[in-house]
Length: 442
Image 1: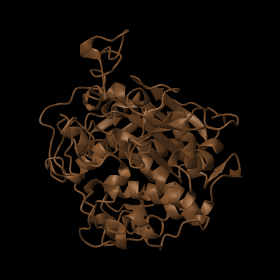
Image 2: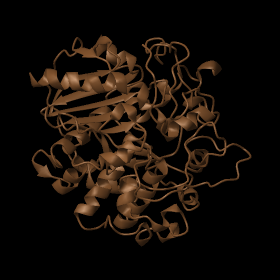
Image 3: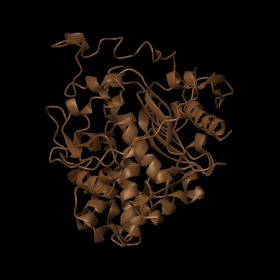
């Protein structure tokens, strides 16, 4: 199935192209030139990736040579980031695991009509989106859970830009508690940014990505700031002759202003890293410790989570979180329940209310997302304003937390699609979520 891809390609899409992966141009109307290999054809177990002691040379995947970031190797690597790069642990704490009650249903034959009018089933959708794992909660019960390839209930998977929504949630919590002032200048918390693009921005503008910053994510431009960001944060190999910034902090302070703040939504991963810096300063904690203390240790998570980190151990707030799928579902269910877990308020309900109200649709319209008409962006969450008031955390290659308040449903998915931009997934995924919601409501 081929779809026309017109959405903006987020940060890591550009990064992966720089190391040899071909993707559609940012902002251009493009089509895949040839059919993509199927999910079944690229199953890492079928391909015997990283099997053996040691694995054969042609089946070995490394970070240092860029092979871990090339499809189909990503179908193994996205479930094994801790083996490839340095990480910071997010402790689940010492409390009991919160059971996820089960009331399983066969959703495989749920009928779906894609955005281009194709008739498919839920089972088809899982293959078309290269799903590594998917879990559906309805009224807090697991009604569907399935894994493919390297996906498993016990193995964390990289969440990519779903990470941003965790950072945005923590920022919203601090705002609700009076520990972070959204109207304050960024420099109140991070004075080191006074000579950067963020020197005259306020915290709310960062939280909602309405920042005017010279930061290009155009992978066809070798001088685009995206490449400095990726190398500085250790998200791609620096290379032997690299002389640029070597930490997220060193990169962020050098960004320059372009345009005016508050003039529209423009998705730029640098904003998430700035917000993470602000949140750490406001709380006095690392991102890993803050997430553990405020949320992860209170969810009843089964497993620790972890962040990818730069050369001095700074967590990637833009895309470095890794969790198991069930624990991601526990987080999504807590958000659906207005910050409660088993009746206990673990984060302020006001923080969730601020997310759910969404941002300005007219700001979002300027961001260039033709498949997301009528949406908005708030606290680093994507707000659909659809008939169910659904909202979502989204990461490249198909990572998702989809919360449907009306259907009392949460869907979490980890995936390894060969194309980074969510425009490759949305024509299948968004109709799928709504079809499942309506099925569960019957």
